[in-house]
Image (cartoon, rainbow, N blue to C red; front, side, top):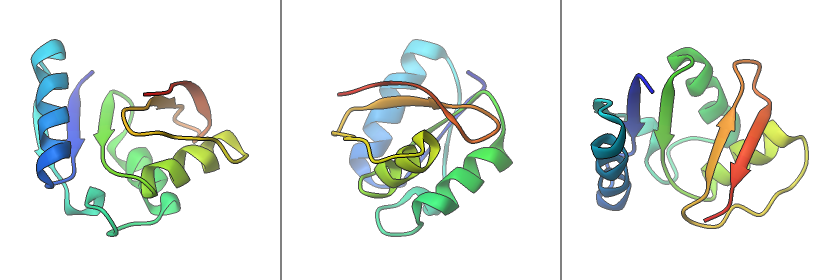
Amino acid sequence: MDRIVTSPFRRAVETATLLAEITGAPIEEDPALASGASTGTQLLALARRLGPGTALVGHNPELGEAIALAAGHEVEVPPGTIAAVSPRGRLTWMVKG
């Protein structure tokens, strides 16, 4: 993992900090990941712009919408879910929280 990009909201920053402690990746805040700031489509576009090796930490329902779009169908995305999306925008794997 090259970097972690997180919502500026406290709970997301806490999660990003835990991930950074484990991986050693630096953290950047991006207001586009704040709750209500972007659609799922916009978050997938952000992920493509940021490129492989970037972890996004954000909120539902926006991240859930992005994961469903990447999967091509509705999926349950409870809090704490971790998902990988390919550079082509397809869901590679998901572990529900």
